[in-house]
Image (tube, rainbow, N blue to C red):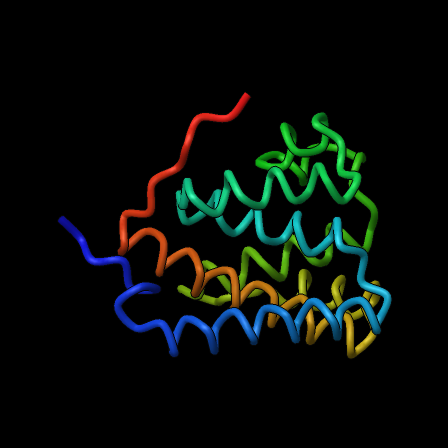
Length: 150
């Protein structure tokens, strides 16, 4: 049986959750919609196959006003016009942070992000991707279970 990293080292996990809370507060101050943060959380969790975070952030996205249709289409966000230019920039950044191999983020994607996001927004989106990647690894390596809902 795996140990739950969050339970084994609670002070470290508490620091991680404090980072997440600070990020959400600064994002709200900068005008980054909660739905955008949740789209980033979900997309990164999809790439990492983190079922615990997918379950949690899908529910939080719906509570924040996200639509089931946009959640269902998120894996193919580049193929639809249902996401705003800012959301598209945020998703491209989040994918680049998650898949830090090769060239990382293309010059085109970075330029698109710079065209759509101000410095604060861009920084916060990158921090959001870094943070959810960390939570994904904690949940995956701990083997956190999910419960059936509905």
